[in-house]
Amino acid sequence: MARIALVTARRARGQVEEAARHIAEATGWEVKVFEAPVEIAALIPKNLLEDIIRSLKDYDLVIVPGGLGYPVEELGRRHGVAVVRGPRDAAGLMLLAELGEEGLQRLREAGELSPSLLLDRWLTELREHHARSPGLDLCGLRVPLRPPPLVVAAEVYGREGGLEGLVAEAERLASHGADMIVLGPPSGWGAEEIVEAARLVRRKTGLPVALDTADVEAAAEAIREGYACLYMSMGLWNREHVLESLPGGAAVVALPLLSDFSLPPSFLERVETLQRLVAKAREAGLRPIADPVLDAPGQGSLGLSIASYYVASRELEGVPLMAGIANFYELMDADSHGQIAALTQILAESGASILLVTEASPKTRMAVAEAKIAATMVSLSLLKRRQPKDLGIDLLYAKEKRPAEPGTGVPRKPRHVLDARTLSAWHGFRLDRAGSHRIRLEGNTIADYYIGRRGTILLRGRDGRSVYRAAAYLGLAEEPSHYAYLGYELCKAEHAAKMARSYRQDEPLLTPPWHRRQTVYDPLRMTTTRLKTGQDEDA
Image 1 (cartoon, rainbow, N blue to C red):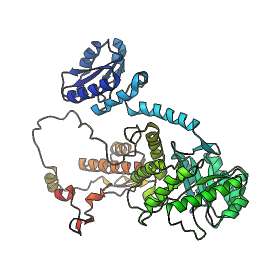
Image 2 (image 1 turned 180 degrees about the vertical axis):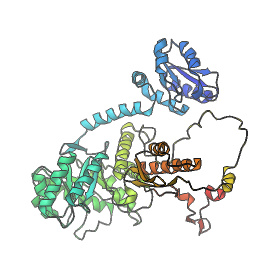
Image 3 (image 1 turned 90 degrees about the vertical axis):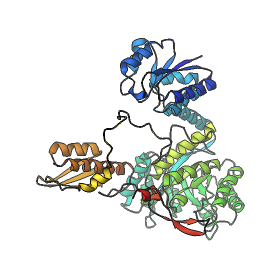
Image 4 (image 1 turned 30 degrees about the horizontal axis):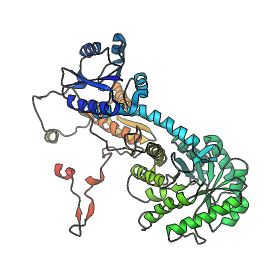
């Protein structure tokens, strides 16, 4: 039976003792809490912590506060005790219960208790599950018949930059986690260009290539040459042409589209149409994948399309299902990452194992990376039969799961309390005699254009700190308020670059939708109203 010691301070003792009790009940371990005689755990002095550790030699593991500002491993080695850092909040201690006996050694080696310890183990289990599950091989990519895991196929359209631009975009999406590249060449491209594009993308990315083109002969040639392994669109309108053209063993995506490109009116008819197409593909020696089609929002048929996935997953044995989720998130004005997370969970539980993702508009930039994170999170959710939370991987963006502990070192009783807004109204912003700064983003790089008595100087950097330090070193400002302003704006620019969004100097980086005084519908009064928020109250 493992013996675990948890070191904390007065303020957090109650929370840590509650966590210790739950851990002991779940594992049968002996888990005890030791309190340092200080208020805040992150401020335990090093010499005091060493005295506590010295008295805990009989314990298998000592977990100390995660917010300590000095190394703790050496203290443990000095006294022959295994010491690791804990999380920054007491709730994170519950990870111990899931680690189990076999995970304690990994915890000792890692030196810190974090969800990544469980994530590494779960990802290994996912890989083992993937290897033994039935699947369809696409140029070395094992597509599971049913999730988990899920595969992310990223579609690239050849709209700008010609062949070179298409290949560069494919490489970008591959670096963002795509498992397969789907090429959608322009309608004006000839067969040679399509085949060459497939060859270059396959060679540059190393990923399987699928072709989404009306030129079936070009797709067939790319598949015969080994540059592609999947043709994306077979329906009732082109079935005979596809079956006659594709070489045996090629994979093909069956769509339940009728001869007039419409969808059957019921989910059962969609599945029946797919069953006929799948049977024909198999008769021709092809390997079918089925896409029941996720309908766009607002047409009243979204639930029907989800039902078609659920039924198809049970009626189409041995056939993977693909879902084009961009049909949804491209057509809703809401951030893509939350939509993709929800769609992935819903479609995976309905049987889809391939997500088809595009980044057709600026609001969906980074959708491939978001889909890859969602695919991993949902795969672990299904594998472990647990909700998609506390898995060590997430798609949280602007919001947080729980508030962080406030910063330390703040005096309890400040000498004066002043209203900064009132004071700032009396002290307007003064122009700096040294010159002015124009800040912008150029790709992922922050560009600070200084214009002043030193001439024109361009400072470039990937982070705001390096740029404002360079500005201070060169003396490109004189007013302290101007340096503060530079730090503020450069911080905004840095976050804009990380979030892959635009930046404009002197404008807010993020404005939450509930702060925009939006007009909303009030069902109770059957009228419209303007949403009021805390920002309005502050104004």
